Image (cartoon, rainbow, N blue to C red; front, side, top):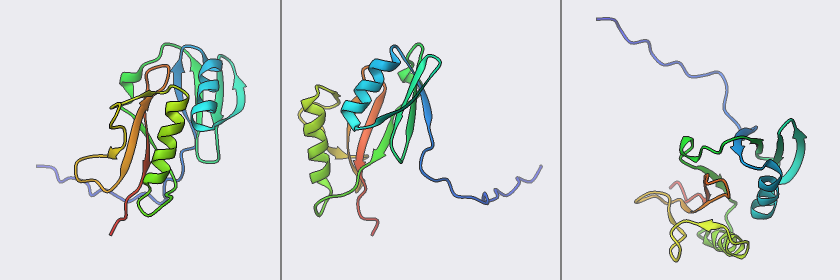
Length: 141
C-alpha cells in the first residue's frame, strides 16, 4: 500500500480577497445595487462588465447568466461596535431593510452563523439571487 505524502504548509499566508467574478444579468444595475447596499464604489469598467469594491475586496460583475447555485454564500466580516457586535449588525440590517434588500429569515434575521457559534450574522440575496452574509466575529476565548 502506498504511503500518503505529508501535506506541506505553503510558504505564504492568504490575505484579503483581491477580487472575484460573478455572472449577472445587467452589470451596471448590479453595480448600482452594490454601491447602495454595501457602499462599494465603482472601480472600473471592462468588456461586458463593471468592477465594484473597496480596500478589502473587488467584485467583477460580468454580463452573463447568473448561477447562484454555484456559490452557497460569501461572508463579509464587519468591525465590531458595542460589547457583542450586535450594534453593527442591527445598523446593517436597518440599512438593508431601508433599501428593500431580499433578507433571509424575515423577522429573525440576525443569528449565530451555525449552532453554537460565537459569530453572529445576517443573510440576504442580491438581485441576481446570490446569497451573502454580513457577520461579526465572536471572541475566540
